[in-house]
Amino acid sequence: MNDLDAISIRNLLFFISVFDAQSFSIVARREGVSASMVSRSVQQLEDALGQQLFYRNTRAVIPTEAGRIFADYARTMAEQLSAAQKELQDKTLQPAGVVRVNAPVFFGQKHIAPWLAELNNRYPKLQIELTLTDDFIDPHREAADLIFRIGALADSSFHARVIGKQTYYLAASPDYINKHGEPKTPADLSQHQALVYRGSSGPNRWLFREKQANWVHSPVKAILTSNNADSLFTAALTGMGLVLFPDWLIGDSLKQGKLIRVLPDYEAAIKTEPQCIAAIYPHVRHPPLNVRVLIDYFIEVYGSPLYWQLE
Image 1 (spheres, rainbow, N blue to C red):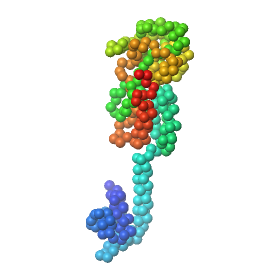
Image 2: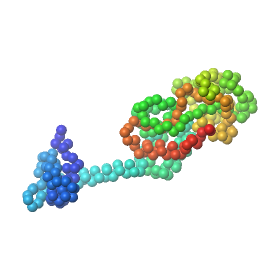
Image 3: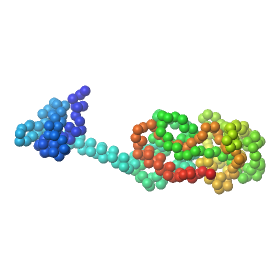
Image 4: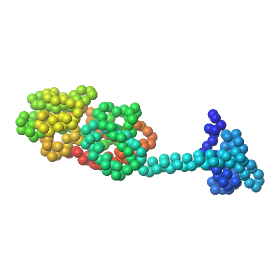
């Protein structure tokens, strides 16, 4: 180890105090320690530097030429330390700087972007980098501080704050129902036009069950498949076919009557495992303040129950 590595912050601060007071005992009384401890601290600094910093006698402690030269450097280092400490303290008190957020495309457009102006009003020093993608994002590998993820949560290598459960509904526009009629059972869907989301693992499967029963896959005739939920949503609103979408996507349209819930006596899903909406971040002992305030903000905004839920 280099001798300079032995220099501690405490040694440095004791040196500056002794340089100003020209006394070990005055510094010791001020700091609530023994004079011998202050003297040893300065001695350790001298040993690390290979220079005598003070002449010692019974009346005074007088800086040497090396001590006077080193004092300027020591004050600069102490000032830089104080500035760094203040900046770190500020970060624990007020969110500031860049925070990188990742979310699914349509969820981000509907339920993150509209709330960013108020977030900015609340935390004006916070800078948001929002990336919207439907690709799987690994929080340990990707440049993201916070990821909004929708799906089953099984990986314990990250922290997850569950926002709520995702519920699926089968829906169609009033025009489609008037033109094609309304299916009464999942078996009837083979006679209808389906608008199907296609992700990286292929087209979504449409699953239905009566309450407490097993999930059953219902084959459908896909008149349109797309990896873009907005396109399918628009097609459904204009009467092209049936969609199986989550509440956060079509909840407003169902409430407003732009879409009508189909097969209301059946539960619907695309996977048999429960699907959650969660905010996740890498497994760290102390989550950054920026991450904590973002999660708390969106949980407050979304409310309980979530504002897009139907029931």
